[in-house]
Length: 219
Ligand code: ADP
Ligand code: ADP
Image (cartoon, rainbow, N blue to C red; front, side):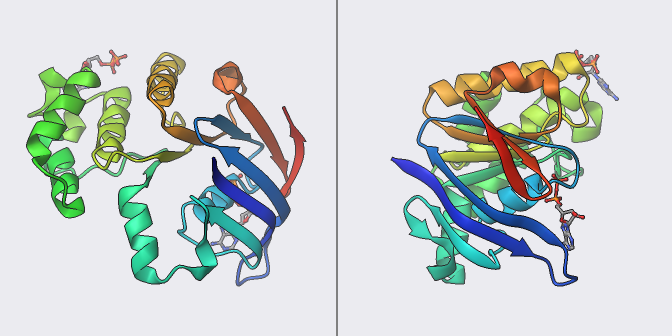
């Protein structure tokens, strides 16, 4: 099954910047796809379009078989809440809340059953059981990113979009995050991960390289 399908997608921002110049791409269920390319090549824009955070100027974006342009705000919100999760370079954790609360609050918002039980299970899986009552500032960068991933997993997403998820981590922490992604990928979650870090290449099942808003090579 195709999770993502883009056909000749162009994105022109209101100030006239052409961020994507006609990108076509399919992502199959279960893939671990790397989106690589230098800063400014269009990686974030591509992820935003796949995640329904923004709309293409031209072309077609289909996610889970549905064309993003044809979904109303409620349908988009439902997709974002239930099927797609984001992981960013900055963790965007709620600083005044504990690790456990950061997860349970999301679970409550998404309306899942017994969010506390789910959160505790995930934090155990993420090897953060000893940190549940800590606040984000008390954690290392790698731990904060694991909390952010735990929060993403609360809604049992089918697709995870990660934008420079290791951008603020040292290489050891970064590798640990990718090992975790691989483990989740083996459980069936599809990944699209944008990074400009070449040392992470070996992790990907497939890579597309962007330059100036175009796919220049794939493998
Ligand atoms: P990357 O993630 O590879 O760094 P981006 O998708 O962020 O690339 O950016 C692609 C191009 O679009 C860049 O030239 C960037 O400056 C521009 N851009 C990104 N977001 C906006 C925006 N909101 N308004 C105008 N230009 C933007
Ligand atoms: P890692 O072991 O992942 O490389 P660090 O070396 O940054 O992480 O941190 C070692 C341990 O110290 C981690 O378990 C982390 O939770 C803890 N730690 C780091 N910074 C703080 C802090 N400001 N307050 C409390 N604990 C911290």
